[in-house]
Image 1 (spheres, rainbow, N blue to C red):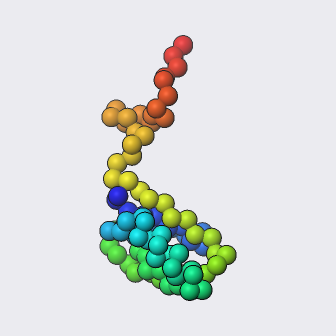
Image 2: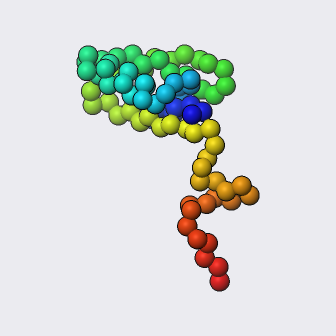
Length: 87
């Protein structure tokens, strides 16, 4: 996995070098305790540490980003895996 994208409060963050299962377990354990500060990366490139306060009812999306897009075909055209329709 390349990274894990985090969407929180309308902003985009990321986490690198982690497994999605481990991150989810960390988030769930933190929420079970009531509130939790999740360490993430803010921005692109060099790590710029940010802390997100997680609490029940606050929307959070965790999106794994694979190394390569499996839906992209080798020629760069988007492929949904369905047969192409031609006229």
